[in-house]
Length: 370
Picture 1: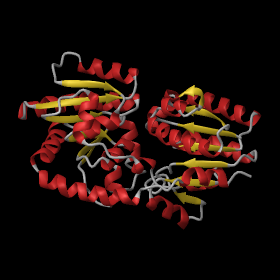
Picture 2 (picture 1 turned 90 degrees about the vertical axis):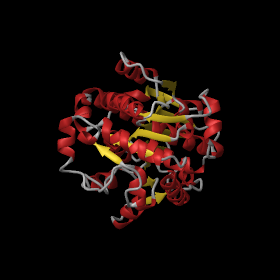
Picture 3 (picture 1 turned 180 degrees about the horizontal axis):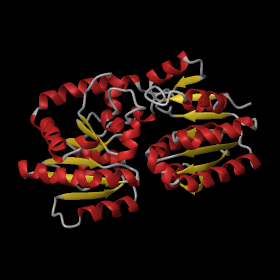
Picture 4 (picture 1 turned 60 degrees about the vertical axis):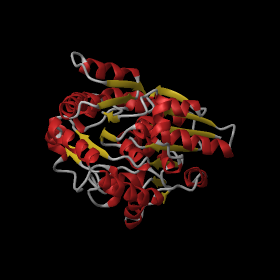
């Protein structure tokens, strides 16, 4: 059996690795190839390009890299047409994967898209492209599946694999990371993409300075997904003398070890929710990207916990709102109000139960193989 998988970022690498493990449990000798990261490679995956090839976010940012991305997609299309997989799975990265899925489906190759684009929030016209490109949509969240059902697109809600992870307690996480087990730790996650760290690294560093002016006992731990992001963040830190503990990877352990998490919007907010950690969410993009998005996005929230709950459970700050004063005050609010943190943990637990998967993703993929 041959299986093609393209993951577009670190969160896709996590999903891809777990999917590969489930597929290999049923087909141990399957050849699985495409684009993936370290976790997919560890699961027995052959990556034709580095994962970082696709790690670009934002309308304007993607346009800057379009020639390189198109060359990569054309190469992958030709590879899979010449070596047809029994099924192709695009994990997230819709602007890259849907075009590839369309070409492969037209050639008779069954296609699955795993992780729905945010068509329920913006660019609803993509539903037509999705219907033409993929035989099955796999969604992580129930409200997404309901949306596709209303538009008569084949869909399966499979839950989120992270919801089945065993929770890690704070003291164990601190010990594993080599952090002091006492005191107050703030986790800072400026993102898993280059442009996210470039946009949020400096505001997060300035927020740490602002927080230390209010409470000198705070310490900060920063997980960075790879060496390139670490280099960018260390350059941003130059000249700052701050109690930062920088770690390669291990973002889940870092969030588990923290009292509060300050983070970029994305899948990591879901992980923080599943770990029952209070968080403050921020996001910034290039000014032109933000200007264009204002006319296209029609949702009241952008962080996953708030979207899942349908209400503002955690503070979120966008673009010009991303200031040290706003972010710092929101972090302090969680530290100063333990009763509110307790109520938040109850709501997070309720949402957690709704997302528990039942090993459905691998089964759904195998069912559509002709």
